[in-house]
Image 1 (cartoon, one colour):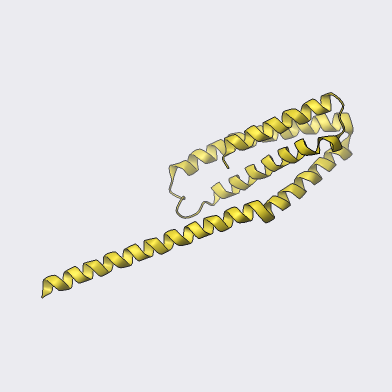
Image 2: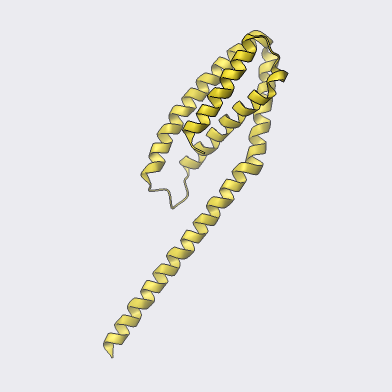
Length: 155
């Protein structure tokens, strides 16, 4: 997941929702587009949290700073979409339709946290554990080699 592809997916869904509202479709009829948009927004929030506290092996990478800038720009675009969508929905369908959208978005966020984001966190924990094990093993092997060389030259 990268911010550029996430915001592209959100924009595509947003444009479909906007067009649907313009031609008078009901909010319930645009469930697929609403779901796609809410999923993209949820993914964007997840990667923002992940960049704010990256795994130890990515903490010193310059890609983290670049990704943070991309996320910043994507979040502002997403906020502009949210504001425009709120105006469209409230104007054409009323406050209850906007509340319904917020409800859909909250449900999707919870579902994604339970499934997709949890899998990603487990994967990162496994990678972190493997890298830590390999680092410790390498350090132990080097110390053992240095000790062996030291004692072999002593004899």
